[in-house]
Length: 122
Image 1: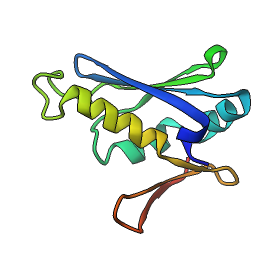
Image 2 (image 1 turned 180 degrees about the horizontal axis):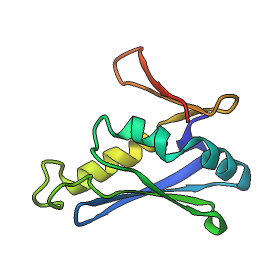
Image 3 (image 1 turned 135 degrees about the vertical axis):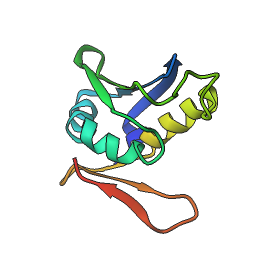
């Protein structure tokens, strides 16, 4: 189940922090995302392109998961080699394009132009 089919996302930055938020369309989607999108699983996916830790904040009243990557934009948006606006959009797209396998809670991402999948388990 593709995350983008069950949730919407937004991205932002503040200083050297990248903020990625997913809002589930319903309670079932929120429960699935809460179980599958662990900090460990997302760090495995995102650390291929974004250094540092991944922090998660659960907002059940909003059916939202907020992920903060405090070292994503080293030196801030103007000093980083990762331009803020474009980097934010690429990072949230990556989360929205993850597939959650409901039976195992494993995550996978089909790479463009390649039949290989990046996979991780939560």
